[in-house]
Image (tube, rainbow, N blue to C red):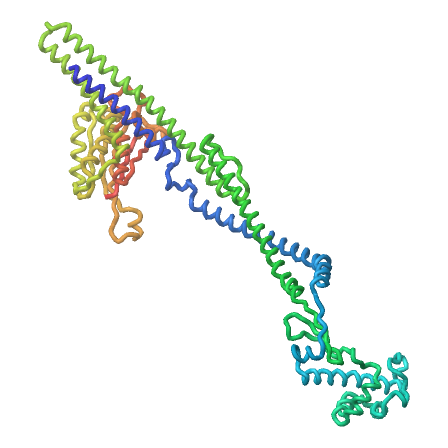
Length: 561
């Protein structure tokens, strides 16, 4: 007998440990103990996809607009500053640099023909220049003589036979004649023909022209050396300005400006990036507050979707905390329930066994009666602990489902037959209505679930009433709409009794462990039967629910078959 009590105590300790681990696991993975939502990684409230997409869209939109506005402002400011600097500082600095870097080289006629141009090219350039100079001078003299240029100041010497050559007088006379006919005189053509036909007269005309001399500039143009400029004089000499360094510095102005503009863009990008990087600090602070105090501080406006997601997580965590507290409360109730449910039969067994020990001379029939009573109490405790072990094992390890073919009518009849004696003892009859069809399910575990529902119905039905056990095959809603080619079916089992009506808010709590319909611990049941039935139904991928109305209570088990 001592070994029996030691084994019983070990079972009690093991049951408490199993149930504690089960409740902790339930609090972590299922926050429904107090009506909360599941708290797991697949939960829609855990940074749901819509929150993530909205946050990314908001970030992209705000970052794009922010950067675009900063870039526009920087562009306008940069080019305004660049223009002001170019008109003031850069221009002055450029002139100072030009004066400091530009060098002038005087080139003789010999060096000119040797390094920069040949003599024929020089002659061509000079002839073109002298033709223009002589033609303009002749035209001015012609206008002066005819009184058409009275407002012009006389630039040359006055017309005098001792100064102006005969060729010039002839050219002036021809120009005046054409002007008298109302035509524009072709003085340039006249001078060019004079140079070709009579070089001596042409040379004499040039000597008499006060607009022409050895230092007359006949051309200014870039020389054949890079970035240098050459001034060509009539005597064949030249001056070359070497501006290589200055031109190089001028060429660098645009690249420097572009580099400065690009540096500003990089600075703006870093600023925008820093702003959004600061958001991570706010986010980490919010997460720390959430983990420490279950509070979510207000986040910046740009993090509004993330704040909503964190508040959703906050609600989940609060639900999980409530579930954990409820689990702790249930553990306390478990210990109290076990202590209460075990103390009474233990006291009875102790009393019976004490009598047997103290009164060895009791009649044999009395001794057997006491022994049977003690054994009944021990078996009751063992059943309770076995059920406790079973539901704890289901919670921790899951329920392996092994489906096989079973006849629905035969299954229901066997379930009713097992409870027939208990029903007859209370004057209750069990009526069975089930089709003779074959389905695939785990018959052994399903029998346990239906048996628990049926036992609960018999225990709480009014004496002399009927308990109805009904089974039927229903088509799944999806198959009814043609979603699947094969017909999906559900096996629906209902257990109906007549007795005291159960309030709607009490129905769901009946599926919790150690919950009884009468709200007390004084019955024969352990309060684990409906909880085990729900575990088995969910392991099949189904559900168990109940409803109570007008004194009729119906529990419905539904599993896919």
